[in-house]
Amino acid sequence: MAAYTLYDASMGVAKDALTALSAVIAKAEGSSAAASIPEARICSDMLPFTFQVHFVTQTVSKMVARLTGAEPKEYENNLETYEAMKARIADVQAQVEAANRDVVNGREKETVGLGLGKDTPEVKLEGWKYVHGYAVPNIYFHLATAYDIARKEGVELGKRDYIMPFLAKFLPS
Image (cartoon, rainbow, N blue to C red; front, side, top):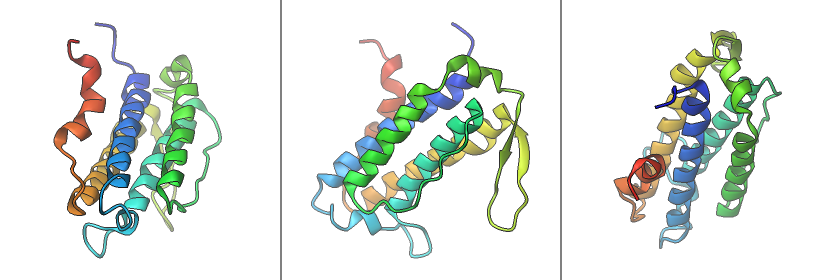
């Protein structure tokens, strides 16, 4: 087996997560609860489905920028329709596809900046620490939360819908 690289751990995960998120959105859009899902929440103090889609895509986009040395693209949290969600995912997928493997792998020990919220100073982390400690956990968390919201709203989703975009390429045909 070839070495598992920072590119694999970041862009590989991002590709699969965006594919899984697209599958969740497609099932949500096709469900009888489609109209209510964009603003649905798990709990009243949690952010809605649209925010989960926004945060996955924003995190992936920023990860691409930080690991390629590009200027991060700031997206507005304005995803009100399924078409807007799908368009955002397509835009971010294009960014991931354009990320150069060698450039990303070369940023493993390079320092990247990370903002942790309002009134919090930016922290500096090596690229691999940023990916493993912040970007990937956030991608998984908000993807799973979008899945959970859709399930709560009655969308017929199962674990296979979540896991197969990650696993299918490794299974024998």
